[in-house]
Length: 313
Image 1: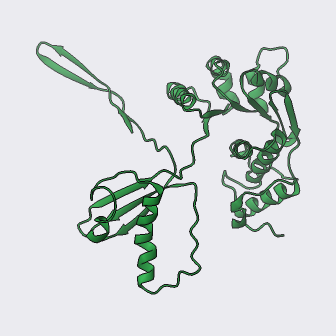
Image 2: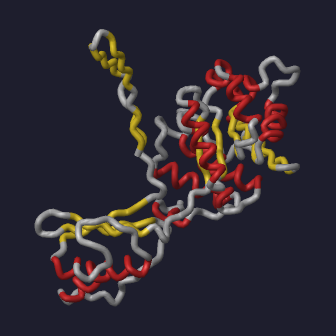
């Protein structure tokens, strides 16, 4: 966590004036998703786990299993609970066991061994805190993390086009999303400012370039490959809020799963089309169901958690 506080001190005539800056900026960073297991315990358990009581120290996966087994499985067994149908599965989420003794002191044993390594840094273009964005991109590149940039809005592109061009031309952006209006503003003043020209421009500087075209679908380019995908389904737009974000999330999902450029576009279109069917930026259960049906129709695999909302008609 970082805290920045600026103070200006002047010494004049043996007097010290302290001029307070604006409110401190606080940024909290967590390298991975983490689930807490909180439980009250006695000293007998604390004496059997590695490390000192009251501290917080990382443990290996096997040590975490020992603690969880002692906390839950052995405890349930002592109360004659039938655990014959209990199934333990390995996931991709970091975990932390928080053990609280009778005095309220806590002992923490985090385990990051199963945490998914960050593959993508997802950004929206903004001139505000541009230094933070640039610093985040630099760190991402040092760690081998790919960078995705959404152009945010045609107004941002119009008013702050030069810094955007510099960012794109730096070669640090791996994937760029632009809608039709943003694409037009990006090439403002050029002879050709159509979506295809914008796609070619973005593709010169990014490994993947995507231009969404609203009801006309999207176009994308990766290397020499170009994909043109129409809008999915007969989705009437009630509210476009969140459409770009949902499209990007679907496209990135496809990339992470190793799918083709065309398949990434199709998933993005299904995802983006799901949120515009109702008011607000949240996808309703009915629209999740609609999205999964569209994916199945297109021969795309539905995510494992798709059974949360039945795809049956």
